Length: 321
Image (tube, rainbow, N blue to C red):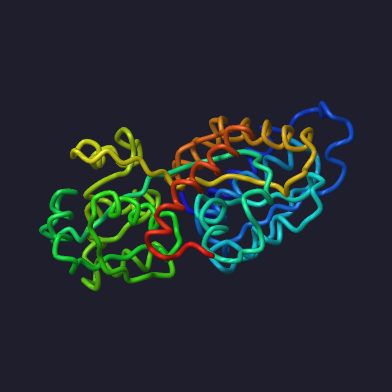
């Protein structure tokens, strides 16, 4: 299914989730702004737009989507955190933009600036190589990295796949030269061209490519506790003797101080959307897995992720003073 068809399907989902009346008569009373801190067409944009239409139908007010890309998501998140904490501004964030970016740069916000609303979806980090590569396993990769001459890529310094890979390398006591890319697609091209030997990307970026002779790549490891349903034939790191669980997740936050009734209303409706049959079809199209967390759980996730990534950033000299 194309992205256009998927977004059309979200309109159907919107209609199916329309509810008669709201439990809280005073919220919402006006349009809600949803900021997507990346350009149109990417995973964050797709998740935000998938939720926006049915959320609008459920709440009875427009949910206006605005793309504000820049600085690895920091521009859009900062804009959302600067908005009035009244329940009428939310932003779609990721593990990178919500947990890591505030520790790396003067992003204009901190973890304390945000009110968690709902974690939505996730997909695991994966390591890929060219199909012709002699590297077939995580052990093969670590052996190849032993001399420090390995060259690898990711969707960008500070991205979830970059930080996840560096966390794994740090755990194993190995290093490699990173060649940055502007997107997962560019990182994959670098693998296919031979510019790099390995890439770390989100599983959703490559799930539809496996077996395609025009894009000859192979997965040498999936960083999930169990085999991922979107890549059932690809082994996990754990199966190969290297337990390492690294989901890349996406969720919604609002400015700190947003009223609990607004937060809970938004979170409950997002949960309904994610558990609907229509969403299951859309998420399969995007190669994402539902991973809802309520506001309390999601706040703990953001904090825990920040604590774990701080160790990696410090080791890399990337943590701000």
